[in-house]
Length: 309
Image (cartoon, rainbow, N blue to C red; front, side, top):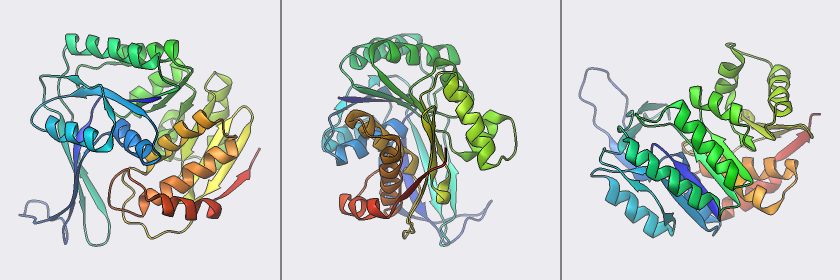
């Protein structure tokens, strides 16, 4: 059993317009509308591979029934905590060139009672899980102390905890030493306190994090692939050329792939190869966080992974 935690889910609307004119009326076609949020997207991909998955977090408002229907359709075990606040809606607007503009709501205010209910739920689910993945941003009312408590609770009850977060939450996660963190290149720069860095500098910083107690640091490099760093070594994988429809959800497919790899006991090079292949398959569709398994199987042998150190 794998459990995903999404503190700040969102109804994602993917829209396409000829161009975005600020201050003017813009008309757009809806490409896709779906219940989303990083942990939910991870759960969807896990279900593509027929993995049993629990999903929890905070959920409320008029969009909640859409999420409930999604969980039923996807056969995701729904353990979300009902809140009085309104779960957010995010808009991803593409122009004809493929350039994406995001409008992201901050999310609802979560009460003390609602936060306490999630603490009990996470403890319950972590005890029966092989992997717990804590993903995404936090709504209002969730501070660094609460996020710390969630990670500690997950680690106390489950051997493998993954955290995919950014900004202050990523820094909190690093202090708690989960098994895996997954920063992208910009997030690595922020952690390092620099505007840019060479590959070697990123590797050196990631190795320092591993020495401090994080087992794996997976650095997403976009079109350049990804690197996996641990005390055992450093691996870099290149993404194959594909017809990219949307990169939305690609990072979440990487997390889903790592969940499966940890479950199956894959070696690091195999972990990275599978993660890049799955992310590339996701990029080939407009549907967020779903892959066509045939695409994944065809891409897997085309993904190249080399040992750097």
